[in-house]
Length: 480
Ligand SMILES: Cc1ncc(COP(=O)(O)O)c(C=O)c1O
Image (cartoon, rainbow, N blue to C red; front, side, top):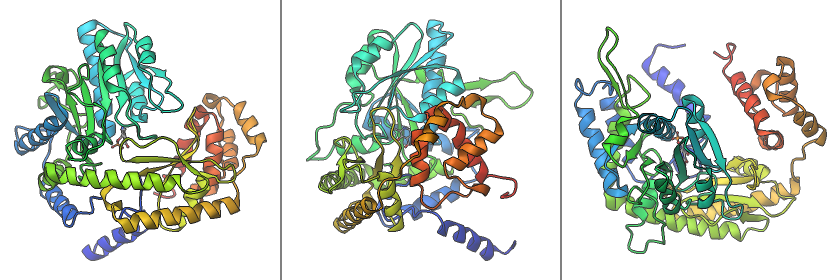
């Protein structure tokens, strides 16, 4: 251990070297690179200037009100709505949308056992919200051909207890836009709130539709009758530093239901618009700086480049023998499945990683087969990068075909099906993890295909029991 300034920073740099790159477009999930010179440096400087400012108390730090109002104004001009809140990310925006709807249903309709209607494709954050805030989830299947929810199914699921209906624009897994206008109209008819999860696509689609040669984009925002809230992440296609999202509402009256105020204690009076108490204003300042610098026209140009690149990549992927698109991309996300039983997409992902590209494996679920997810950002939008990516992908498919698919021992699947996830003993957990190929000491294998193959063969409830065990082994006392 060293207390020397340079040595400390050197150690951090050493740790970062083991991570996936965050710039350059080769990491096709988790990170968003605008490719614009100096933008990250601007964000870093803004973040540093506001790192110590506490967003907890807007009377002590009025700058946070100014910055947040500016961002919300920019967002409502793009996506409609009359009020908003800056949050730490997509998950927090989704959590707050559900919390607000629960409080609203309780306060205005006396609903005490609220339900949350979610298409099968809704982001996991909404299931987390239901669990945290005590709502019963009512899932609605999606069309197995388009991966979009059927409006009539949503309507049929609405009851007196429904607090909120959620649709995606677009969904993370398949990159398609649910029929927002139809669902929102049906929800409104029954007096139920409707949230559009535009966390990943809202900023991109909102700007893309301003372009002169914009493709057809279905209506998805708060200008659509019946849509009452919308989440949109600035740390995705706003290319802001991580920790930046907006939750927009039709009006401030709805928004207030999700706020927490407390004056019944001897300390300072509390008003929290988000889940956090003390919060750094760094991400807020960085998001403000980045959106100022890029501007509406800049985002429109970036979105146009991403749109063309997504189309070129999707066309290119469709031409690779053994691969197929799971859905025609309606935003900037591509889901690639295999149409050759000898090509295992998880092996393709491992092969791509060996050649410096991260494509995100998505295990099979319902009608959605195993596939690879690609988030296309502006940094990918170079002809050379697209050519390189498609070339590497074709080679990776060839190598995966030669290696053959990972086969899961049917005996494991059978044994797993008989386990009760709720009642697993510590010993059974150990056995299950060993079977899944997660070794002693918790280190994850370099090649993930065998682990993913087992994981997707298990009942989801069993995976949900085992996954925290796998990750828990990374954060052990020995490691700490
Ligand atoms: C549609 C959608 N909703 C919610 C989220 C959650 O956002 P975050 O990871 O910023 O918490 C994501 C993240 O990818 C998303 O794509």
